[in-house]
Length: 570
Image 1 (cartoon, rainbow, N blue to C red):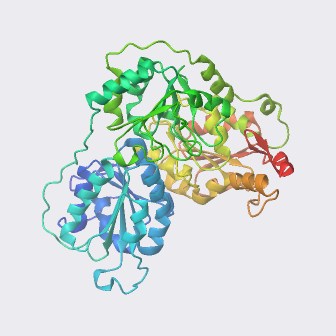
Image 2 (cartoon, rainbow, N blue to C red):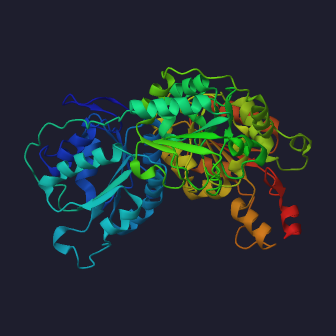
Image 3 (cartoon, rainbow, N blue to C red):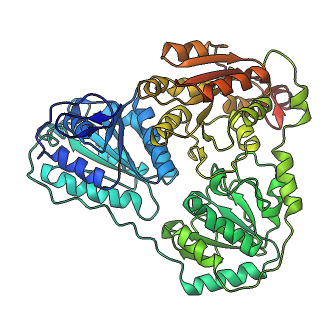
């Protein structure tokens, strides 16, 4: 809801309220946040930051989004920042709230997503006495943030907030955490200096490095590019470089929208269980350019690729010097903004021979095609491949997909083609419970987009209550749940390694459509592809959030294995 207030302010949501003193530390802090372009704070309200929540709610350019769990709040803040490039705020109170918030903050750290975290703390006079819910929050959050600190003076809070925004958005982006004793936010601090938006430096690629990289790529026989999240904002320049140097392109783990999947130079996704045939072009490459990617365990297939055999040279461009060569030896490492570097490479004066990537491209297309056995599948439950096929038929190709962790996602990663920019929000941290809150935030940040959350029943029941948040804020998202009654990823590992299951069978099938309706959303249960396509078509046009409960076959545990085969082999 939005509209004018009696005093001339514009509200983003909720009723107009009496204004509180405008010279408190909370108001000074919120002025800094708003000047930095931050527009939302996601939270479960707590007694340790009453004035902060109130100041955000009163500010004409900001909105306070109350969620059903701190984990959902943190996932929402992470997803909004990942989509927009501008941090959001996640706020929680003291020990229990801060602990619940931590999973989403860890996700932001591993995904290089800027986030501002406010943690309410025990009052100043009680600190160090194991006061009610007191935890050393600075120490707690230090390993999962770029910077964590505790503020002890109200008149320093705005200054520390400005510093936090700079740290979160410069270099490798990431979360910062500010713990604030509960008595500081309401203290009057006088008029703060006019807040200024932080300047984000974009270091260019040096001319010498540009020329060396350009000549190296031009001379290579089989050059490929691995593009990560740091290159998402430079998608068009990445396409120009790939075409300029006739290089094949791989998307890093869960960064599939970094390069158009329907482009003839796209060779696949470096995710979990990537088919060996798809990895062939990377294994055979003599030149690998890594751009905006920290070469994580999953992207490198267990730190195995690119090969370190002396035959393959690796060059890495990253804005964070700590990431260059951190997990792989590199022939050339350059500290530069991915967009600046790609633009420079695209304009380098070199001649490049044509290289034919059609065979490698064809192998990826085959891996992303619904196999015949899925089409022949019969029984009361759907084959996961058929779910993806139904999604491709019923959803617009520019739908924004948020996906959870779980074995269902291996079908999504293979089968959904990301043709457009900013169409994937997924946690490289592998955090369960991400999809539904992420979709809520994405819809709030981009209300004109079709936003679809895809989750397993395990992840959906961790944070599915945020459907109520979606209903309350008018975020008409679609949630597709693969319900197979298993914690599928762990069940697969147990079957393969132990030959039996333990603790991974979830009771069911559950009436998840009824669960959605109880939260004020729409719900549909489907057993066939025809029912799925009908439900999705209706959901996209609905004015309420919709959960589509898809009953999938637990026997089909991954694109390459069945539970029976795994249990038998073990």
